[in-house]
Amino acid sequence: VLVVASLVACEVPAPEPSQAPQDDLQPTATVEDLMRSLVDPAADAIWDAVVITSTAAGLDERRPETDDDWNALERSAVVLAESGNLLQIDDRPIAAAGSVSELPGVDLEPSDIAARVAAEPRAWARSARELRDAGGVTLEAVRARDVDALLASGDRLYVACENCHSRFWYPDDSTTSVGPTTSASPSR
Image 1: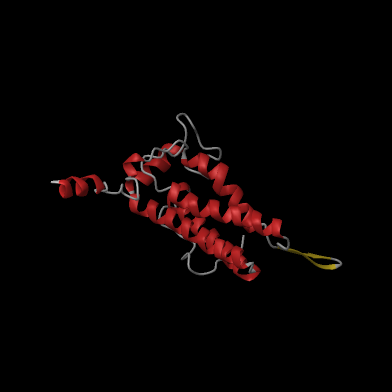
Image 2 (image 1 turned 90 degrees about the vertical axis):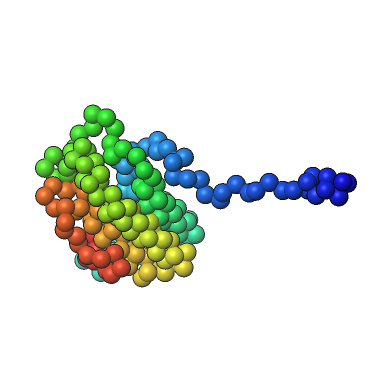
């Protein structure tokens, strides 16, 4: 009897699942919020990290050099990669209620974007994963402090962004893409 009581007392409860089900995730920001607050500034930081300007005096080149430069780019790359995950959370609204396009005719209205996302949830998720993956490639380039790889990752990021925008944001352009995210595209 004592042995059985000792064994019961030592029994360890089953561990909790390591991942919370997606049902427990509740978005607090809209897609528009994520784009304005996270994705746009982070992407701009990556795209503006290396600039070569031709002047009368020759080429003027700006590239990341210091630890601070590379650390700032690392933060931006992490934001891009994780934003791709955030965009995959179910039931995230496209924009706040009553929001309208700032560029009618250039961008669709939020309700039209939401309808496209609802009609093609797999394509939406694929676009979000392409952003995540482009952010991951950018993060690798930044951590390696490889300017050439950073430039290539910026091209991949551009393609991921434009493929999503072409399918979901731009009027009458829902099936066009600028190319695969695994190859280079024209730089911005």
